[in-house]
Length: 210
Image (cartoon, rainbow, N blue to C red; front, side, top):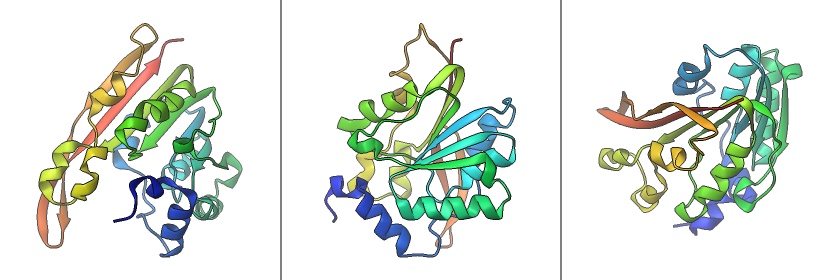
Protein backbone atom coordinates (compact mmCIF):
# COMPACT_ATOMS: atom_id res chain seq x y z
CA UNK A 1 0.00 0.00 0.00
CA UNK A 2 1.13 3.54 -0.75
CA UNK A 3 2.27 5.42 2.35
CA UNK A 4 -0.83 7.17 3.66
CA UNK A 5 0.65 10.65 3.74
CA UNK A 6 1.88 10.27 0.17
CA UNK A 7 -1.76 9.94 -0.86
CA UNK A 8 -2.35 13.61 -0.13
CA UNK A 9 0.40 15.04 -2.29
CA UNK A 10 0.20 16.86 -5.59
CA UNK A 11 2.31 14.12 -7.20
CA UNK A 12 -0.05 11.34 -6.13
CA UNK A 13 -3.17 13.08 -7.43
CA UNK A 14 -1.56 14.36 -10.63
CA UNK A 15 -0.54 10.79 -11.40
CA UNK A 16 -3.98 9.44 -10.58
CA UNK A 17 -5.78 11.98 -12.76
CA UNK A 18 -3.28 11.53 -15.59
CA UNK A 19 -3.86 7.76 -15.54
CA UNK A 20 -7.43 8.10 -16.83
CA UNK A 21 -9.39 10.31 -19.20
CA UNK A 22 -11.89 10.94 -16.42
CA UNK A 23 -11.99 9.69 -12.85
CA UNK A 24 -15.39 10.98 -11.73
CA UNK A 25 -18.79 10.94 -13.44
CA UNK A 26 -18.87 14.61 -14.42
CA UNK A 27 -22.21 14.97 -12.61
CA UNK A 28 -22.63 17.12 -9.48
CA UNK A 29 -22.98 15.43 -6.13
CA UNK A 30 -26.70 14.96 -5.49
CA UNK A 31 -26.28 15.70 -1.80
CA UNK A 32 -24.69 19.07 -2.62
CA UNK A 33 -27.51 19.94 -4.99
CA UNK A 34 -30.06 19.03 -2.32
CA UNK A 35 -28.40 21.32 0.21
CA UNK A 36 -27.76 24.41 -1.93
CA UNK A 37 -30.38 24.52 -4.68
CA UNK A 38 -32.67 26.71 -2.56
CA UNK A 39 -29.90 29.15 -1.55
CA UNK A 40 -29.52 32.54 -3.20
CA UNK A 41 -26.37 32.40 -5.34
CA UNK A 42 -23.30 34.40 -4.39
CA UNK A 43 -19.64 33.51 -4.16
CA UNK A 44 -18.61 29.90 -3.60
CA UNK A 45 -15.40 28.06 -2.74
CA UNK A 46 -15.33 24.39 -3.74
CA UNK A 47 -12.47 22.70 -1.87
CA UNK A 48 -11.19 19.46 -3.40
CA UNK A 49 -13.03 20.31 -6.61
CA UNK A 50 -11.41 17.57 -8.70
CA UNK A 51 -12.56 17.68 -12.31
CA UNK A 52 -15.02 20.45 -11.47
CA UNK A 53 -18.49 18.89 -11.65
CA UNK A 54 -19.81 20.59 -8.50
CA UNK A 55 -18.16 23.92 -9.33
CA UNK A 56 -19.62 23.88 -12.85
CA UNK A 57 -23.09 23.07 -11.53
CA UNK A 58 -22.86 25.93 -9.05
CA UNK A 59 -21.69 28.35 -11.74
CA UNK A 60 -24.52 27.25 -14.03
CA UNK A 61 -26.92 28.14 -11.22
CA UNK A 62 -25.64 31.66 -10.72
CA UNK A 63 -22.73 31.25 -8.33
CA UNK A 64 -19.31 32.79 -8.88
CA UNK A 65 -17.06 29.87 -8.01
CA UNK A 66 -13.44 29.34 -7.04
CA UNK A 67 -12.44 25.69 -7.34
CA UNK A 68 -9.49 24.51 -5.24
CA UNK A 69 -7.55 21.29 -5.65
CA UNK A 70 -4.06 19.96 -4.99
CA UNK A 71 -3.81 18.54 -8.52
CA UNK A 72 -2.95 20.79 -11.43
CA UNK A 73 -4.12 18.04 -13.81
CA UNK A 74 -7.55 18.05 -12.19
CA UNK A 75 -7.77 21.83 -12.36
CA UNK A 76 -6.95 21.84 -16.08
CA UNK A 77 -9.81 19.43 -16.66
CA UNK A 78 -12.12 21.47 -14.46
CA UNK A 79 -11.31 24.63 -16.39
CA UNK A 80 -12.00 22.83 -19.68
CA UNK A 81 -15.27 21.45 -18.29
CA UNK A 82 -16.34 24.97 -17.30
CA UNK A 83 -15.54 26.38 -20.74
CA UNK A 84 -17.47 23.59 -22.45
CA UNK A 85 -20.43 24.24 -20.16
CA UNK A 86 -20.36 27.95 -20.97
CA UNK A 87 -19.56 29.08 -17.42
CA UNK A 88 -15.86 29.83 -17.77
CA UNK A 89 -16.39 33.47 -16.86
CA UNK A 90 -18.06 32.47 -13.58
CA UNK A 91 -15.27 30.16 -12.45
CA UNK A 92 -11.66 30.46 -11.36
CA UNK A 93 -9.22 27.78 -10.24
CA UNK A 94 -6.61 27.67 -7.51
CA UNK A 95 -4.02 24.99 -6.86
CA UNK A 96 -3.56 24.72 -3.11
CA UNK A 97 -2.48 21.94 -0.78
CA UNK A 98 -4.81 22.39 2.18
CA UNK A 99 -3.44 19.21 3.76
CA UNK A 100 0.04 20.81 3.83
CA UNK A 101 -1.33 24.04 5.27
CA UNK A 102 -1.66 26.25 2.17
CA UNK A 103 -3.92 29.18 2.97
CA UNK A 104 -7.41 29.34 1.49
CA UNK A 105 -9.09 32.56 0.37
CA UNK A 106 -11.81 33.78 2.71
CA UNK A 107 -15.13 35.62 2.63
CA UNK A 108 -17.32 33.23 0.63
CA UNK A 109 -21.10 32.91 0.75
CA UNK A 110 -20.72 29.15 0.35
CA UNK A 111 -17.83 26.84 1.13
CA UNK A 112 -18.26 23.22 0.08
CA UNK A 113 -16.12 20.13 0.49
CA UNK A 114 -17.31 16.83 -0.96
CA UNK A 115 -15.57 13.65 0.20
CA UNK A 116 -12.42 15.36 1.41
CA UNK A 117 -11.09 12.65 3.72
CA UNK A 118 -7.89 13.27 5.65
CA UNK A 119 -6.11 11.48 8.53
CA UNK A 120 -7.81 12.04 11.90
CA UNK A 121 -4.77 13.85 13.29
CA UNK A 122 -5.06 16.44 10.48
CA UNK A 123 -8.84 16.69 10.39
CA UNK A 124 -9.26 19.65 12.73
CA UNK A 125 -6.63 21.76 10.98
CA UNK A 126 -7.98 21.10 7.49
CA UNK A 127 -11.63 21.64 8.34
CA UNK A 128 -10.95 24.64 10.56
CA UNK A 129 -9.35 26.25 7.49
CA UNK A 130 -12.49 25.51 5.45
CA UNK A 131 -14.70 26.90 8.19
CA UNK A 132 -12.66 30.11 8.33
CA UNK A 133 -13.34 30.73 4.63
CA UNK A 134 -17.08 31.20 5.18
CA UNK A 135 -18.29 34.81 5.30
CA UNK A 136 -20.73 36.01 7.97
CA UNK A 137 -24.16 34.91 6.80
CA UNK A 138 -22.58 32.28 4.55
CA UNK A 139 -23.02 28.50 4.46
CA UNK A 140 -20.70 25.56 4.96
CA UNK A 141 -21.57 22.27 3.25
CA UNK A 142 -19.55 19.12 3.95
CA UNK A 143 -20.24 15.71 2.41
CA UNK A 144 -18.40 12.52 3.27
CA UNK A 145 -18.51 8.75 3.32
CA UNK A 146 -19.88 7.62 6.68
CA UNK A 147 -18.09 4.98 8.81
CA UNK A 148 -21.07 2.64 8.37
CA UNK A 149 -19.88 2.10 4.79
CA UNK A 150 -17.11 -0.16 6.10
CA UNK A 151 -19.71 -2.93 6.25
CA UNK A 152 -20.54 -2.66 2.53
CA UNK A 153 -17.11 -3.83 1.39
CA UNK A 154 -16.86 -0.79 -0.89
CA UNK A 155 -14.26 1.08 1.12
CA UNK A 156 -10.61 0.19 1.52
CA UNK A 157 -10.44 -1.24 5.02
CA UNK A 158 -6.93 0.18 5.46
CA UNK A 159 -8.42 3.64 4.98
CA UNK A 160 -11.62 3.17 6.98
CA UNK A 161 -10.31 5.42 9.75
CA UNK A 162 -10.60 8.35 7.32
CA UNK A 163 -14.40 8.06 7.18
CA UNK A 164 -16.31 10.38 9.49
CA UNK A 165 -19.75 11.32 10.72
CA UNK A 166 -21.43 14.72 11.13
CA UNK A 167 -20.13 15.19 14.68
CA UNK A 168 -16.55 15.43 13.41
CA UNK A 169 -17.53 18.65 11.62
CA UNK A 170 -20.13 20.11 13.95
CA UNK A 171 -17.79 19.76 16.93
CA UNK A 172 -15.50 22.31 15.25
CA UNK A 173 -18.28 24.90 14.93
CA UNK A 174 -18.57 27.49 17.69
CA UNK A 175 -22.28 27.41 18.69
CA UNK A 176 -22.10 31.13 19.40
CA UNK A 177 -21.27 31.77 15.74
CA UNK A 178 -22.92 28.94 13.83
CA UNK A 179 -26.38 27.48 13.29
CA UNK A 180 -26.36 23.85 12.20
CA UNK A 181 -29.09 23.37 9.59
CA UNK A 182 -28.35 19.74 8.73
CA UNK A 183 -26.24 17.05 10.41
CA UNK A 184 -27.53 13.93 8.73
CA UNK A 185 -26.56 10.41 7.67
CA UNK A 186 -28.89 9.62 4.75
CA UNK A 187 -28.61 6.36 2.84
CA UNK A 188 -28.89 5.66 -0.89
CA UNK A 189 -28.97 2.51 -2.97
CA UNK A 190 -26.23 1.74 -5.46
CA UNK A 191 -25.37 -1.17 -7.74
CA UNK A 192 -21.78 -2.38 -7.54
CA UNK A 193 -20.47 -5.41 -9.42
CA UNK A 194 -24.01 -6.62 -9.86
CA UNK A 195 -24.82 -6.28 -6.17
CA UNK A 196 -27.48 -3.99 -4.71
CA UNK A 197 -25.95 -2.10 -1.79
CA UNK A 198 -26.95 0.73 0.52
CA UNK A 199 -24.35 3.36 1.30
CA UNK A 200 -24.45 6.06 3.96
CA UNK A 201 -23.41 9.66 3.47
CA UNK A 202 -22.38 12.25 6.01
CA UNK A 203 -24.14 15.55 5.26
CA UNK A 204 -23.52 18.76 7.18
CA UNK A 205 -24.82 22.24 6.40
CA UNK A 206 -24.27 25.13 8.76
CA UNK A 207 -24.73 28.89 8.51
CA UNK A 208 -22.35 31.40 10.07
CA UNK A 209 -24.37 34.05 11.87
CA UNK A 210 -24.19 37.49 10.28
